[in-house]
Length: 214
Image (cartoon, rainbow, N blue to C red; front, side, top):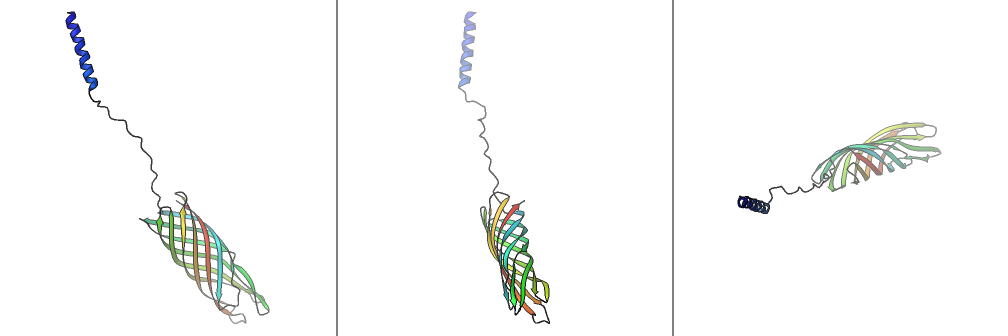
């Protein structure tokens, strides 16, 4: 009987040893997943602020050309297709483009008030950088004053064209630099007086802006 028990024990040891040599059926440990941030896109709504300088030029005018600071806000939308980015932007700026001059023995001046543009934008994205061209509508309020005659305000309609560059520091914060040339329709001041004139106006705008992309 002891022989049978010993044989059984030896058989059990042999089976366990054979089973230990078989390949394991357990699945290999899973590799940890690596998080990859989504690729940046210019698509989306944005809003921000801007500031810069405007350099005015008058044609056929005895009024002084006005230069000075500009400051305001903008809102827009971009849509990206591959590297191409198209969009629309509107802005409203206050201006400090005021200047005094003389007209004969009289003093005169030209002040600018609110300025706005509504423009299409089209550009090329290079990762987080965007180079763009832009064109559209421009409007500005101008007020001419002559001592003894008072002042007259005229809203001038016109157009804007320009270019710029923008860079995304994060997925939500971008900064831009742009140049715009704006040309406006003629305005009539003080008709029927010695100071009467019909003058044209153009403004070269240099602006920096900061945007938040939603």
